[in-house]
Amino acid sequence: MPRYLLMVNHDGGAVEEPMDAWAPEDIAAHFDYYAALTEELVASGEMVRFTPLADPRLARIVRSDGVSAPVVTDGPYPESKEVLAGFNLVEVDSEARALEIAARISAVPGPGGIPTRQPVEVRQVMTDLAFDL
Image (tube, rainbow, N blue to C red):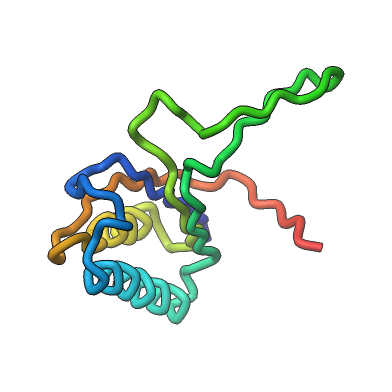
């Protein structure tokens, strides 16, 4: 069965204020929606992994030539307005099902229950090698 990586991007979308400015009930509704969807996908056997990522302001970029000391800089894409917020790895019957799940993720509620409409990039996994030791 094919696996798809659903990359949840944050680009501001329909929600302009950062989550730390949302009302507590809106934050709870947002995470309750994700929890319910995750439980559903785990129960159906489609969820392989769900991994939210930390604030992109904490990200670092490492560049190395393999010889000199690596250069470490702040942030993933400082000139970009879009950042990867997290990802889901699902194992589904078809690309259509992966797109359906991505649409539900994109519709996660934001402030006032308005769907955030965050873009979710869907890419099929070509090879999945496990390195968990």
